[in-house]
Image (tube, rainbow, N blue to C red; front, side, top):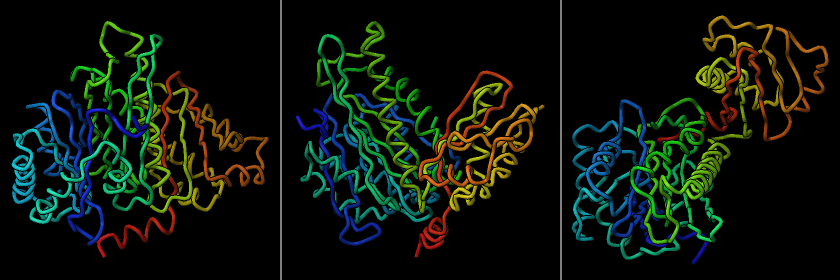
Length: 398
């Protein structure tokens, strides 16, 4: 068995010409009969047609196919968008002799344009003919939009009795990234035996500390979704009564999801910095997360990061406006890559500008903020804002 394959999963790729000619932009994932799939979706109020259809279908029945197109988000398209999405599910169902409700559709690309369903449907036979167990790398490329690299990870989970299962996942995303899943997509599969109920809980737990902890620009997409499919074709059984297997699988799933999420940040639009923001000693986890996001979303902080400028006053200003009630600024301390910059409400006595410049130079940065008011913490991963970020998004539709 190839490291990048999961028994019971086949993938096919085709060219539908949805936005660009001669480019793989249609991906089909076939899941063996009896597989269970859990999914989480965007909380954006303007949810795309495929999000609405996929969520409805996944609640009703066990899915057999995941259908993904890039180049068009089919979001903000009203009834025509819903009709186009339903037509794509029906077309696939006719070719594969299943019910349309056994198809989970996903789209990514430009918002506000109805899916060109005729072009998509015309490419379905090619995607079906291409189905194979070793097509994860091609599929990871086909779901890309402004991404510059495919995002693909795998894990093998083994417990003490020697039983093992496979985990493979792919994701896409580069801009419009601040997932809130209670334009990024993630698809993970395993051959473990897991009930749908356990899958759902494990996926949500993993997503909450991975995909929901990344932000490029603070914009939550209309199309965000992550799926987790278990084909049950191995002897690795995850159940509430087997603590060892459950803990091992959850740890591997969370690690894989975190790696995929961080891959998205490293490939953020125009990004030159990978930034980890850790807020510690907060009054609550929500408070720590709020402070981290305020810093991560500050254009002034992000542009200083791009310039490798230790303009620490911008970070302190963001912390101060994060909405923390009764914040004692004298208890707050700030470090960049281990260099103490501010404490007791002012610049640290040991700090020098030379040390700050050296701390900001690496591509990987850690911003550590200690609120000194509790025992809770939160970590977030983000990027800087570069000239290229502006250029990419200014020219996105041209």
